[in-house]
Amino acid sequence: MAKVTVMLALAAGPGFPEGSPEHRYEIELGLDPTGRPDAAAWAADPEPWRARRIRPGAEPLRGDVQHDPDHGWSIRFFEAAADSPDAPETRFDCGPDPVRPGEHVTVTEPDGTAFAYRVVGIG
Image 1 (tube, one colour):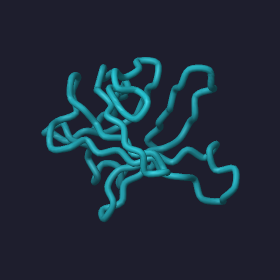
Image 2 (spheres, one colour):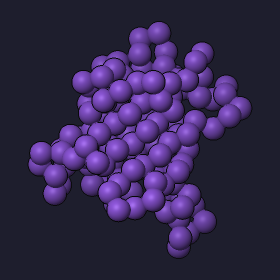
Image 3 (cartoon, one colour):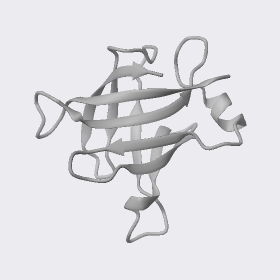
Image 4 (cartoon, one colour):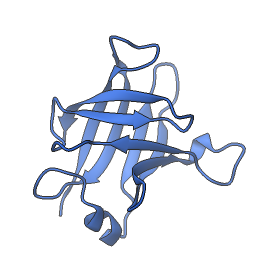
């Protein structure tokens, strides 16, 4: 199973009705034959699947991808965990469609705010 880097750009959300290509995520994923994130491949991989969050005027946050069978996919950003030993989780839901350019992903921040991101590239 080969991992790919999925690039997401903010499509819409609170404060960004028109989106913002400067707000991005880069998420390393293993995809199954249908183009969906592969939980079995994640569990079997000894290396963490990397993630980065990019925002204007801030250093990129680095994290890793997590999967929980009961709660789905998330990203832990350790640099954001200043007041707690646990890294806050940013959840992402790819929906029923394959992960491919033009599709949308819902990203829910630790505070519960949800944003729509568009897949803009897979490399």
